[in-house]
Image (cartoon, rainbow, N blue to C red):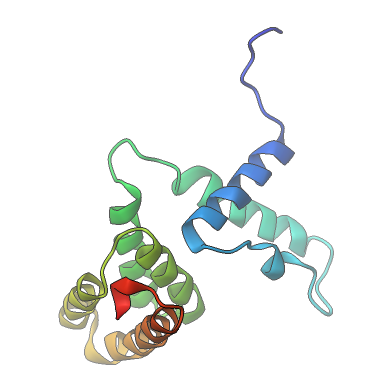
Length: 142
């Protein structure tokens, strides 16, 4: 078929990994290798989750831009208390134009509606990411 835009699953996955790198500032492959004792189908889970997040959800631009999507994602991860994913969402947000001040404001809202304990726990992760970015010389965090 000439002019077809169909892609293979491998191409879609490679594109998802490229999107993740653009958003995070580093490649995800270091997190996707098989862990000690991990069954072989663990690779399927990681591929599907990566494809869904970075191949399907993040590239959508029709209604929410990447910057807004990032701030929403920070708030969701913090509200759920998923601290390691929160770390990644904070990096994505800061890499895509969300300011530390805006992140603090999101935590103020989170504290009001999800509770102080949940907000403070997530905010500690935010402080670590702010420090990490400042150490890297990121002007948005200095």
